[in-house]
Length: 199
Image (cartoon, rainbow, N blue to C red; front, side, top):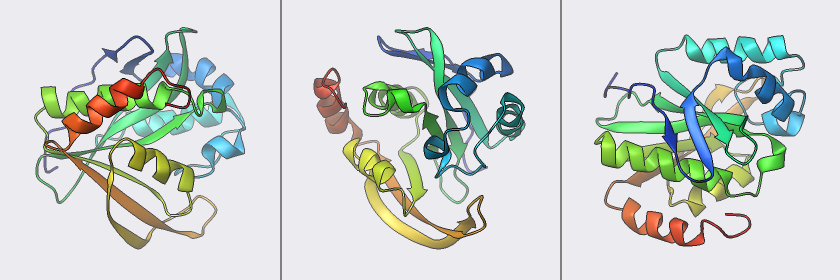
C-alpha cells in the first residue's frame, strides 16, 4: 500500500451516520436494493437477488484489506440505505479513494450523497492528512460522473478497458481527483446547498 488506510470509524452529521459495515446491516441493505438492477448496474458485482447473495458481496469487501467499508445509516429512518468505502490507491502517495458506493433508489437525488461525501472527504483531509481524494466510475455511468463533478471532482483521465464488468463487457473507467487545497471552497459551496432538494 502507498498510504495507510484509516481504521474503521464512525462519522456523522445531522442527516447520516457512517459506521463500519457488518453483516447485521444486511436486512436493511437488502430491503434498500435487493434485486434492483438499476442500483447495481454499474457496480463491480452482479445484482443480488437474495440476502445471501448480498452477504457474499459484503463478505468479500470485509475480507479485502484494500477496502474500509462503511454502512450508510439515514438518521430519519435509523436504517442502512447503502454502503461506501475508503479504498487504497496503489501508485500514489498520500492519496485515498472513495468508492464502491451505492444507495437504495429511494435516496437518489436526496442530500444523502452530499452528506456522506462531506463526512468522508473532510475526514480524509482534515483528520487523516491525505492530500488527494480519488473517485472513479464507469464511462457509461453519466449520473455518477455528474455527481462527482458536482462535489468538486476534476477529471484526470480515462483508462480504457480498465476491468471487465460483471456481464463480461469491458469497462472504460473515468478518474476524478480532489486536492486538499481545492476542498475548502467546494466544502463551503456544498454546505451552503446542503439542505436544498437534490443536494
